[in-house]
Length: 348
Image (cartoon, helix red, strand yellow):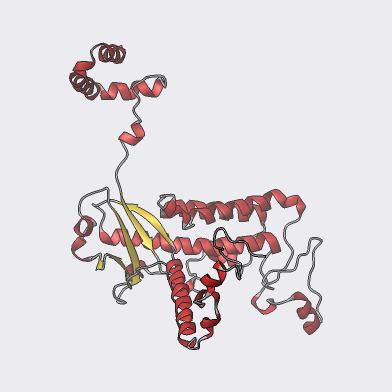
């Protein structure tokens, strides 16, 4: 009712629009809670407030950047202790590495079956020729090109379980992808654990008898030690990791908080890097990108080759060119050439 009255008033008295806006703003401010509640139950209400956006807690966004272009986002607050922040970021970092191992091994599990023992890893045909022992081949045998798995995946009867296994692995891969930085979606250790739990449940449904202890899927899902995997050298220790931003380190001493390093503005986004404690500050990033550097190198290489050709061309071959002939215009006027001709003259 008030809203309609103000609209009619504004249409009728256009000269007093400034006063109208002031009164309208005062009305909204004084009846904000009622309007928010009313807008939830009446989508057709002309005054719409989103209670989720109005009550959204502002967070400090930290973009972790790595040397290979990979990275992820983490949200925190200015009241968070630096040591808690570093521990949270390291947990997400290690969780992403674990997810890479899980995704790779789960896809191999769905495609080629359970992993072989360490002594039997290799090509099945060569193993049969060398040992003389026949390799167990099921009705749906599919040899693994890497020779790590037995080649007996689940049959068509368990196709739904295999699809679930692949889908959960795909969801986990998308969640830890670096594309989440472009989408501005922050990662959290709790969500990573939920995604890994989904994959673990899919593995249990597809293989209810369980996996052997040496299978990489079981190791990556249940074991805390990933040193034996291909990401073992990248795993960080939360107590021996440093966080750097703009060439300065987040200090752990004296219970320092994020606000001591970044200020108390919650609407802050910074780029940080992780290093091992004692290794010093991370190296600075190059001024130009890799694509720009390659384009510049190609341009200067071509320019250098052109200069070499000009330096070597010290003969007088160019004197035989048509553009260097001083009598070319005279011959054209006389009709001896194929160029311009003098007006009014006819030549046989």
